[in-house]
Image 1 (cartoon, protein in one colour):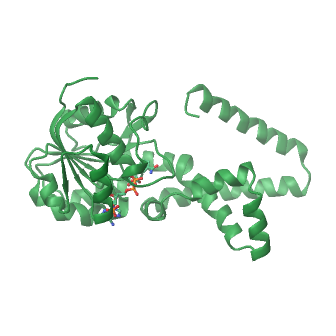
Image 2 (tube, rainbow, N blue to C red; image 1 turned 30 degrees about the horizontal axis):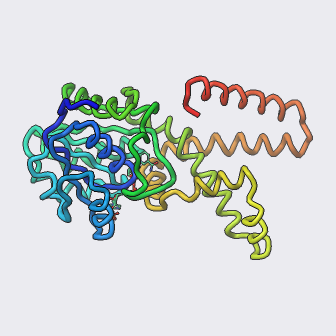
Image 3 (spheres, rainbow, N blue to C red; image 1 turned 135 degrees about the horizontal axis):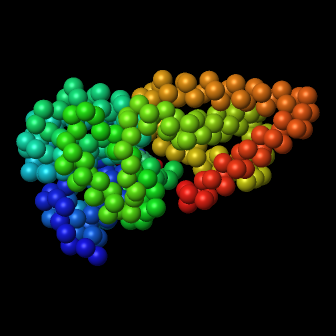
Length: 295
Ligand code: NAP
């Protein structure tokens, strides 16, 4: 346990799975003197209170950020502009604001239009999560062993990047810097398309005739069961990710559909060689993922 205080007051704006997990780390490791939390609903604020990890809970985001030297946004990316507009004028000059959004370029664009110039924005994406939502779903070890990607712009302050990096390293993450648009393209194929496939397959089941649907759900075996877990992720969060990362998702979806059509042809023509060759290539990708401890 370290008692090195990285910040005086950290204000968490939005307090669901990601921000509550990070707040647990901040509390246990003593990374800030004070922890503020804002969430818009009474129900979530009541859950935060029960957790006993923050010093002050607010129903007003402008009050929550007052005096904070670090503000962390943990809300759906589509809510960024409206939420930050409500507290932007209450930020102290020099405050660092960072986010955890799964899409980066859209968040940068939105914040550049609402943040005062004397505020240091550090766009970040901790690539760790589960399909669960809400403050009670968080846990301290969520980030351990995973990557956090910071996507600075040409205006991002270097000292602010260092401080945000320290927070994520304290949570057990490795931190890398990447161009925001490149991040969005990479995440489109590693995360967004896999979720889209899960939503689509489980959506196909939802449209089946009632008797067939009942049997599928009853006998949900390995593969389908895993898809239902992914497709059980938060609907608003994922709605926003697909809309905010539209260009990159459509680009990767185009390639995916081409490859899927090729696979369809291989099955129709019973092209054993093509099928086996592809499945060997994919097995190598899996080995690479396991070797890098990302499984
Ligand atoms: P979550 O558990 O669903 O919590 C969402 C938080 O945002 C709650 O405090 C909620 O407030 C608030 N919120 C929802 N809609 C809002 C709106 N329209 N305006 C203002 N506040 C709103 O979400 P999460 O999983 O922590 O995700 C937060 C962010 O992290 C998202 O941007 C997501 O892309 C990113 N992320 C998620 C994961 C993951 O696996 N979940 C991984 C990496 C990054 P109330 O509960 O009070 O309504």
